[in-house]
Length: 119
Image (cartoon, rainbow, N blue to C red):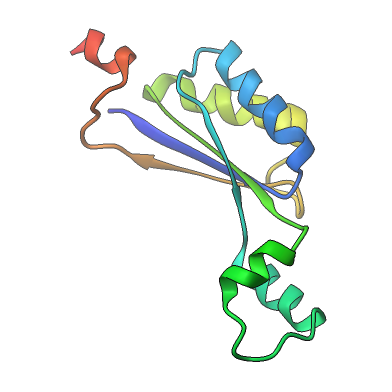
């Protein structure tokens, strides 16, 4: 069954390295997006001393600290290798401030060549 592998890290500068490592071990379609954790967003908005009526969208434009979210859909046999590669770059994911990773079963896949060829 295909798996969605998601990694979220505060180490923006290492996100591209993780994505490239995933690609080298066989993951295709690796995607990176800039994301904001709600806790950090709330804490930052307090320090900016913004009025209550200011929207979260305008707060986002002023916040410098973001996360890198990296994800890809792969065959089950590649999941452990992706986690291993991420750990080589970010450090042990079980430790604080390295990253959060999780894997979700994907029932159906459309538009990803690797899955179209195998089915």
